[in-house]
View 1 (cartoon, rainbow, N blue to C red):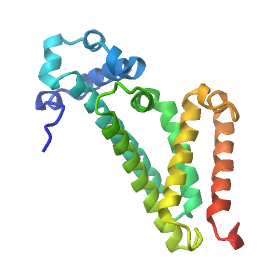
View 2: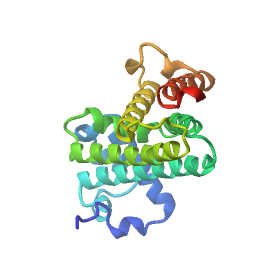
View 3: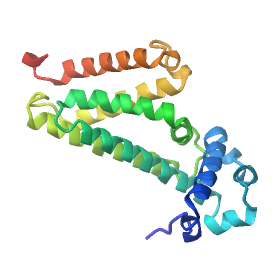
View 4: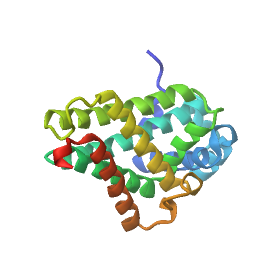
Length: 220
């Protein structure tokens, strides 16, 4: 079993101090990328001694991997809330709510999403393929539960391949959210500069297209 990147001494710190260190490290890695991130800057921003950092984490890579765990945890809790709140809704309503929750997540946690973008586009990121595969598996598991429900309720037409539907949803969601976060990745909808109402309208429009592609013809 692989050792944890974080030491018990960090987990035993007061919550306020832990959050301060996490915020400082996240700002450094998300803004500069793994190679350019400076542990000295993390130490200065969090107000701790440099030696303390190595009492809390195995090394620079350990800090980075722990931040990845933190980011996945926040995303997991966000989507679990959406899943519970929309449990009785149809699959396309649940997808719309999930997409808009992703937009809200980016607005509230831009550096957590920025960390994902660094992993996605910076090939010098350590264990990059492993981390990206973990993100895709997490997304696939989430969409799989919604697709299974949609098929069992007849909201998605019989004969649709669940695997293909999951791939489609993952691609659509990821591309939409990147457009919200990065203006260079959206030259058609202007999501990055749009207000919340416009982004929500575009999200509904997009899920409407998905619905017309996946729902039984008589329900569209």
